[in-house]
Image 1 (cartoon, rainbow, N blue to C red):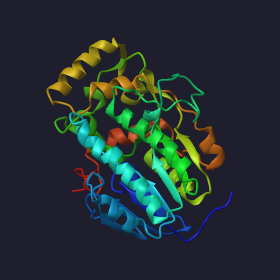
Image 2 (tube, rainbow, N blue to C red):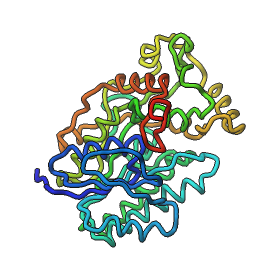
Image 3 (cartoon, rainbow, N blue to C red):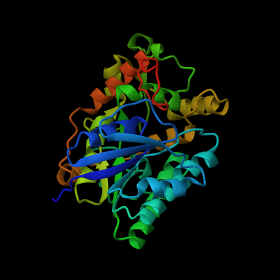
Length: 345
């Protein structure tokens, strides 16, 4: 497997959960000469061999900016994504879909030879919940009622056409499971639970039971481990899709053990009705449509990443979740606008 050296890499969405880990992973690779991190707001963050610049992919003029930033780059890692506001899917579409189209067009215009795109397990159609899981050939139709899945799936179709029209561009699609680390805890709490849930309440003694819901089976991965797979996708001459996930598969029993809580069987409709009411009242940002999608996500087989990226997660999924929960309780974060938390301020 050939590798390249002296690479100049541009990362969009460089200040979020995945972006900060990917930037550090790339900056630590001797094959990478420099990294340019793009985000809506330039962070107060120092990473070796890394510079920062501001760009808002949701703005119509972003395309010209991107061409300038991409000029001379050997690879673009596209991570930028807007999760909220879930009540305004047109706004998220402008950034996530139209912004991605601007990135893809700029890659071609600037003559960048490689594009590494952050897809997701959420792009997959509903599938089996047991190991060994689905490989990268599983249909990427998403769950149509959830905006996140629709957008990820739509971009998969865009990239199908992109690869056909621009065969000279090496395209990699990363499809990770849920990604967690301590520094992302405050951001993810705000995205999914809202600002009104104090992190100090996420303590085992205050969570006496975990709901055992039909379909509540998922996979997790430490964000830093995922970042190493992104790094390998940049420096190796690989293309196509790669599933990323760590063992063990997480269900209510595993969550109960992590939280020291009792597992109680609960009908899905009860939780779904309560979540829908809270979302409609703007009490929580996570939509019931995303909840529906999570219950249908397939388990992933990450064998291709193990073989072709020489990649293995260094931490089990349970350690990633445990670190995230500790971060929620402590208000952990980092000195970027998306990740800001009590520890980072």
